[in-house]
Image 1 (cartoon, rainbow, N blue to C red):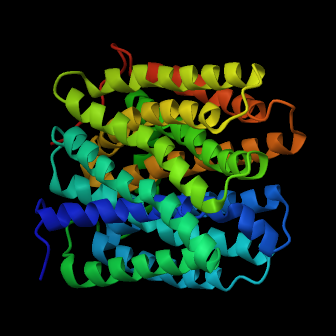
Image 2 (cartoon, rainbow, N blue to C red):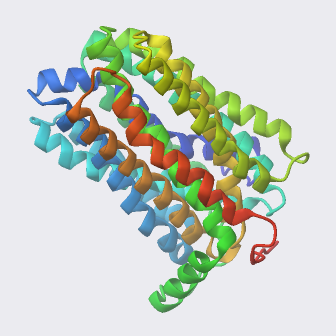
Length: 404
């Protein structure tokens, strides 16, 4: 039975497609110390398995959008889901940290299909004016799986070992493949006859010269750098420095991810009352406040879990306010190139997210008597950049090329 666009089943599929990439990353974070112990790897090498996943995810953004603009959403999505499932199973059998690092790049390439095509499928079914509210509700739904994933990953890691997390997400990928194969019809009404690299580059160049387009994707990317940097650093602080088990970490991190859910819910209430661009411009202040609070607690030598998780919640709240509005604004501007616009938005998210993890990993190696300060120092530039880049959306900026 085909899923009709705009139906509840269609929305459920959009939520699932958008969630399995973040789920794959967040379910893995509680078992990262266990991976290091099992494969005799240092913390920075284990962090690289998170970074390479995001690099693969970022690179994959470049291909799925343009391919789906040419060949259609359905066949490209099915190919991506199949590739993701196969590489996830391979990760479960990784014999060494080097092998896992390499396989995570491939896994990220496959996972990118869900987020890119989920955004494009949303634009195929909804108008530009509908996008902020629809994306906000979808973003809220997408946050449920990544919110629960660390808890699931913590229990799986403690009961069955870290490899069980890959079997879990591999099963999820298989279910998505079957549902998409049987239930998803083609939604792209603007397919071109061929992939015209020149036209593609011109279209991408036009987007990247559009001040308002950049005003959407740059704050989005810097916000992801902050959140993924936190995801890379917090597991080692809570487990190795403060002595929490993977299961306990999974339960505690629910509070942090709950901040994103709260931010998305508040944004839902603001849709129609406050302009989406205004929300993007001011939400970065939550990031600044979160890092100031974390730095103050660290310098005061408050060494406890809430001194880390509390600021993380506040930072995640700000990101929750940005994500739906920024994605809707970026993808909604160019419906005839929705796949390409989605690719650029996804590239900003995961590319800058990878930068956040690399920065945190490098500073963690240096260390500090104040255990949270490397995290604060590494992420502070991204918080400032979120605020500054959002100024591109100030009144008087060039009008975007909006289409119905």
